[in-house]
Image (cartoon, rainbow, N blue to C red; front, top):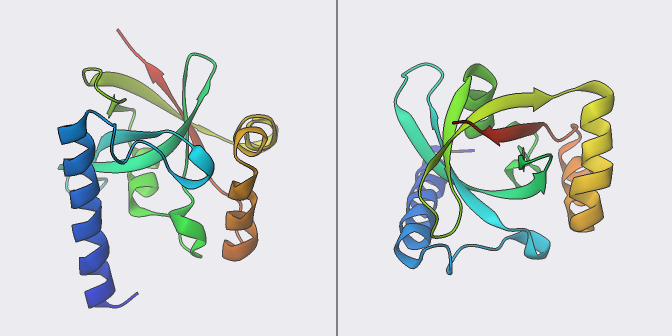
Amino acid sequence: MNRVSKAMMRTAGKAAVFVYRRSGGRMGGKALGGAPVLLLTVAGRKSGTPHTTAVSYFEHDGGYVVVGSAGGTPNEPQWFKNVRKAATAAVEVGPAPRRSVGIRVLTGEERDRVWTDVVLAQVPAFAKYETKSGRPMPLALLTPVG
């Protein structure tokens, strides 16, 4: 991705966060196939600076499963790379107040089961991301703390 494309993606991401917050999730609260969207704030893995992004989620085991799809691009999204390095983050779901969450990246059999039984069961269109990207979609479970 070139510099201009990256700048456009960053600007679009910031606009999505702004609109989501201003509307309490009424605008920007649904994604591909009707998947709900939350705002995820996680510290940058290098800078430690908090970054917020809008991501699709799936309710599971009292928490939220998020998918590092990057729209099916070959590389994992930056926000998921940050999730891999963080122990905690914060989420905003619709108009509800921000909540702290613990992070657990799902692996192996558990990842495969959640991918099939939760993500694809609710939004089958997510399958195209693995095909398009040539990589398994990483999953993380965000569980509210406190």
